[in-house]
Length: 114
Picture 1: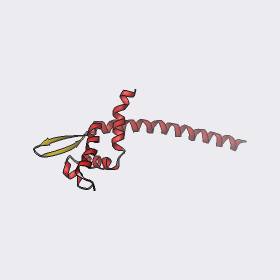
Picture 2 (picture 1 turned 60 degrees about the vertical axis):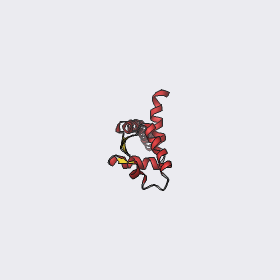
Picture 3 (picture 1 turned 60 degrees about the horizontal axis):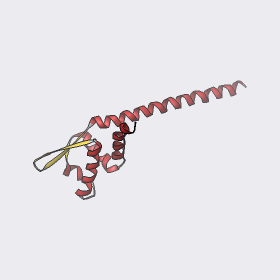
Picture 4 (picture 1 turned 180 degrees about the vertical axis):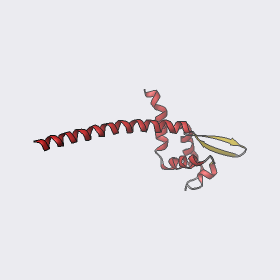
């Protein structure tokens, strides 16, 4: 189980940072060159490249170099894996809250009958 959760751990680690989440949001629209991705952020290119390295090592993005331009692309499969895990957790908690609501209603009904 530990080995299976490692890829998911790296995805959530990558998504924990607001700069990296902003990059993912931008790449969901279309692929973009690194320089264009870096424009809205108030940091040097070396610092921004570290963020991209985390995203690439997590598998959320990949890049290709053509000439002097490196273009980043989103990896939808890795993002879908994180979304799938979150959906499973949401289903578990929805079931728990439904059971809790039913229990509370049954307790309330019993109190009304007494």
